[in-house]
Image (tube, rainbow over all chains, first blue to last red; front, side):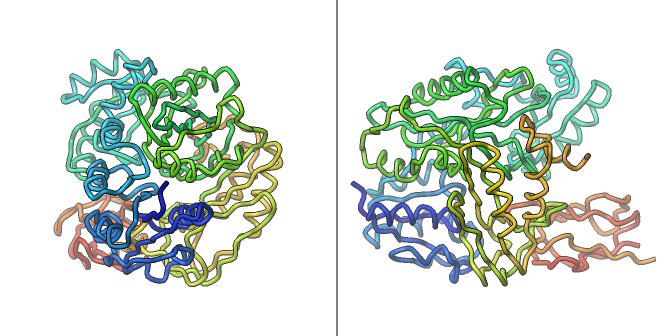
Length: 445
Length: 71
């Protein structure tokens, strides 16, 4: 069994991992940058190590400093959280060479799923449908042929893109040539890589994902779906589980497909398989995330399980003692991400939190990395905290989250709380069945 | 007429995409700021010619700081 874990992360996810380590009587070592020296996520760790620096490159991405800290503090494992080094296959190898357990999959699984094109091909090999599209297209003539074949609208995507940057919808053949030239130019400026590919644009798409755990003995757990269609800037803001758009038949298909991929590639530990589901309930593999997700607490809230604990147990070589058929799912859960950002334009709002008061309640959970006088620096992402509520049904979970948002007090910086309140209280959200155009539709009303 | 172009957010100057002497239209992107892992464009408030940059790539800026001058 793992006895001591270094957490190579910061903010709310570091605090969340430390919490489970404490519960399991595993000692925790937190690392921090100069910018985070007064951060509240460090408070519950058994030991803290300053690794210096401000930017991610100087700190939470500096694998040599992190591994040295783990070794010198006698840790036997590293939990990477999400982001930073969580999906860096080289880091996984460095951990192994230093005799440390990486709490996550092996380097090859990360490489395979990290390369979008290889991941897509692999998914196809295991029978998962993928969004119809092309490989890299190089000339206006080539893209014209591809798009005429796919049918409009289409989505142009920068091959090196991510987080929605470098995406462009094209409605007809007439606007294709100009859109192609602008997308390649923009991809060059943003990523130093002009490569562009094209996908069929799906109508009323839902972003649905399946959480999976697999142990070293072949034990597999696939969970109920998480609905992640409420997005701004192509990033998730509100998640729920289960989804109002998934019926039992589709749920089973999604869980089977995700399980097939994860078993097929011999994946070990926690993964999330993301799908796009269209208006006709057709689903397509989008990507697989080889780590704990930001929104994992909604799955924990409906099952009562601790996914970080299960990750640690799997990494220790334990056999999962849970059976899929016994997964107790009788609740509905919601998560709202509290961001330091302008609630209208969603622009980031760094600064100092002058007042911070979290809501509490019986069916309320707050995973936070900040407190009063906490500094939101421009160096890291704007996530302040995650607010999770649950209930026996969706209405109850909604009622709790609206009340909790009302009682959440954050001053000194702008937050998206007013947006979250408006979104969750809207008839569009309450009715369910919303798609990834939720924010546009909300604003249009 | 001198027009001040102001920073949209507090953060760092990630990329300056135009050059001194360039003519821009309203809403053209002049530079891209970066903060909290997001890239936010700074657009021309109206058309004009860029006569000066008040910042360099990598510099820190505060929301509403003047980052460029148009004429």
